[in-house]
Amino acid sequence: MAAATRTVYPEASAVHDGRLSIGGCDAVEIARRFGTPAYVVAEDDLRARAREFTDALRRHHDGPGAVLFAAKAFPATAVLRVFAQEGLHCLVAGGGELHAALRAGFPPERIQLHGNAKSEMELATALDAGVGAIVVDNFDDLDRLERLVPAGERQRVLVRVQPDVETDTHAAIATGHADAKFGMSLPHAAEAIARARAGGRLDVAGLHVHLGSQLFDTDPFHAAAEAIASLGTFEVYDMGGGLGVPYTAGDRVLEVDDYVAAKAQALRTVHGDGRTLCLEPGRALVATSTVTLYTVQTVKQGPTRKWVAVDGGMSDNLRPMLYDARYEIAVADRMDVDGEPCTVVGKHCESGDELVSDARLPDPRPGDVLVLPTSGAYQHALANNYNGALRPPVVFCRRGEARVVVRRETYEDLMARDA
Image (cartoon, rainbow, N blue to C red; front, side, top):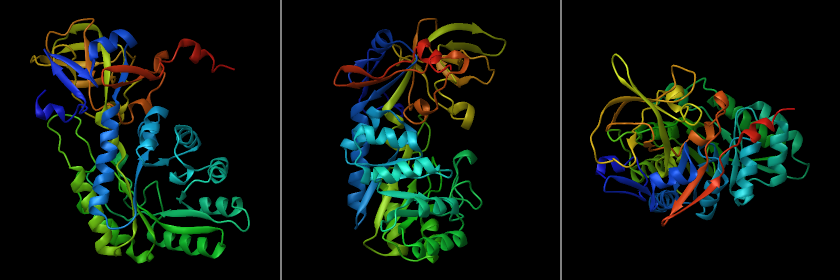
């Protein structure tokens, strides 16, 4: 496998005689054994990414710190369990993710609850569980927490701030600008901090800043650290996440070491030594750990392009439709053969159900197994039942052994939801 191509596949992958293997398991055999579509995860890649970030944090930060996995990126219990075992913390965005994190073995004190519309039930559940921190996004969060926290007790909170810093990313995943959906402006954050301290039931441990996702420029990190300096000095600074990952061989790459060093330097320069630094690498922990396998159903030549239709599509990968996301795709047993221009589409009744518009596939034909890399972030999380599609299984591969950790849905599962 060429070095440029390897950046979008798991480290635990290889090509022999044109055939792709993931975690020592032949991709075509996985497809035959478990069916397609299927999300196939190299477990060792998950562990390697976790260790890469924790090691970098220890190297570049002089105080306490934590690496948080945002459960929303890949909310499968088996994935969460790996990160719990590796010592990471977990960021959850609601009651369902909180339940999954606890089930996966995260100690409550290593869980952080955030979100812009937390219900009273979700907050009460988090308090009962004893989560390490709740991120206060708005004044309604304060109202509910001040009512729910029992007299004589205190809940540790972080206040989420809009630092009004622009980033070079898709508008749908930018979160640090003024008037964003998440967090409070600097004046409102100052008011929230004062009010929380006066109430006596909330311990304002620090600030939470998240600029967005899929970031490759480190300059905004320093700008964000400077922007929040007016709010005072705190024990904890959650500087968010957003490290971008390559989805195609030609995409930019920001090294983990450079990303962590930039955040640590920004915090140290503006806020001094000894602070607790929390990082949320986001998709960078899981994206390249996983590939999606499909089976070609039909091939037809149109007036201007060849259409290759697979047995999945927007039901298992909404990202091309939501974010104009671009991907690589290949034939799993002809990885080393150059191909012809094709458009790979899904099976759903939508013209926009296109997975890869500029693919190059060698003589594609029905029955071929196609592999789409960089599938670990948000594909499983956004999977749906459009047109009655069944959500795919998640298959872990390690040292030549493959096992299902999330089973494929059945039609009975769909019918069971009916009243």
